[in-house]
Length: 176
Ligand code: IMP
Ligand code: MG
Image (tube, rainbow, N blue to C red; front, side):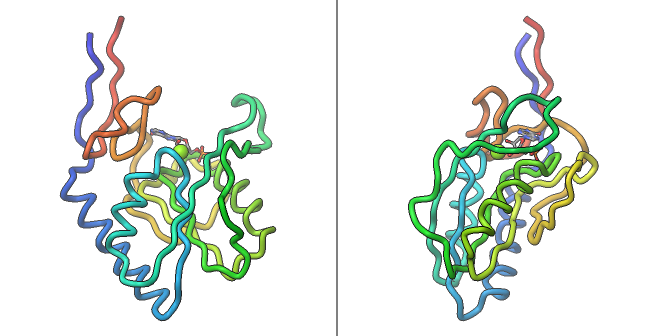
């Protein structure tokens, strides 16, 4: 049986929220330049759509991280697979994530980035699953808060699949 995916957030709804977030960010940083840090691979689609709608000067950089160890390791340490190309010292940084679940990845990543002395650092996520939080992280911009379900599309994957879906869908795995 094939996997079943039911639409949770339509393409139109995402587009509307991305526009609203971009307006808010453009207002908050009026007269400033921002550096968007796209966390690969999940936030690629979101980062591009958001960046296109910002009316302030924007620079982009990319980082790829993976969680260390397994679920029994509570440290929440992340391994940097690909680091940023440039220094963030003195810059207004906005970290762009696809989804915040336990919060462990972001909590560790923010700690790593703060050491590099940016002028400011904020966090923007397309999706948030607050009911799953294990570590507190201050999220400055949230697209949509969702209930506890495994979602795919708009950059989010299951085993590297479904990233290209233009909407956010709930995945129900098919049986072999
Ligand atoms: P955290 O450290 O638990 O917050 O992990 C967040 C990461 O887990 C995200 O960047 C995603 O890669 C992945 N993730 C969490 N929930 C989902 C989901 O529903 N679908 C796809 N990936 C998810
Ligand atoms: Mg991710």
